[in-house]
Image (cartoon, rainbow, N blue to C red):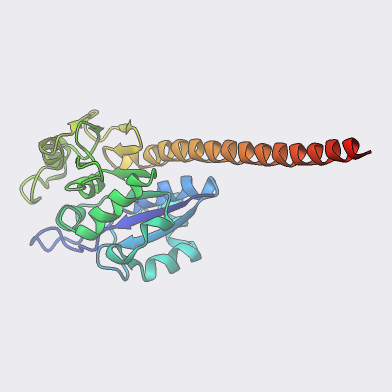
Length: 258
């Protein structure tokens, strides 16, 4: 079992429009189900801590309903930790949930940037979907490079912002900003699923891509588990061989004495 941290926006309003927003429930719920079904532990954090705002729940989506009704999840979301007090060493992966609010509080939150960098530097998996990749901006790794530099990524496209009627409201176009920081933005048609994997970074274009991002993250985590088990087996075999050698040496010495 691995520990995965889901990070959520604390912004409840889209700019100064008065339009309510928060984290996208579908983008949290569908990955949550993938991770839980795989036996992993899911925890939650947000930019400001406490109970993060959320977008509308689709009552006809059973996964969203299950997510909002799960007692453990509800308890975790009732009082999330602030990202700047989270110990990144506790987590094997971090997943950045989208929602338009992330465009205002993800890019310039040092606590989030440090958290993402720490998980990745330690060999962990980083995932983000839709507007969640806003949290990949300004993340600098231990090697001095930006996380997105020279990497292929997916995120909410300029065309999707226009289609959603938010192109005049958002502070910047996410796809453009990612490319400004050295990424290659890869996209599918408007609102079609698109998931991109580049090393241990997994990104998705829109809500339809959320489960796909989680599945690719799960594959990477399964590979880590496999490698850890192989290493444990090698260590156990080496220990057993050492004990057998010691036992044989003692037996040989005893035979010589006689």
